[in-house]
Amino acid sequence: MFAEKIKEFADRISGKLDDDLLQGALNYADHNEEPLAIEILCDHLIEYEVDLSQEDLSLLKSILVEMKINISATPFKYFDFP
Image (cartoon, rainbow, N blue to C red):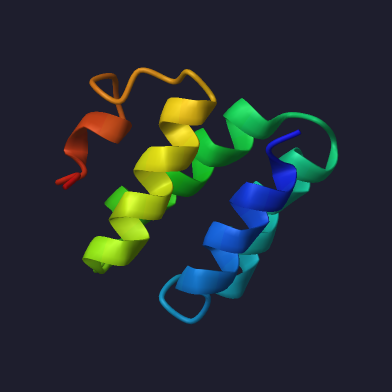
């Protein structure tokens, strides 16, 4: 259900994160594990200190909120959401 939105976000940040890491996270979305996919993707973004634009952060936040994921929990709490 959320796989397409996660992939849309991944397309936006393509080139900012190693393609293998990005694809590894997206593989979970392809297998109906969207919460795990977005968590792993966010873990990578934090671990590799990927610089996200305000638009990227807004999109990420909207996906997390729509998925009913607690943005105050780890790893999401480390993003400076607008």
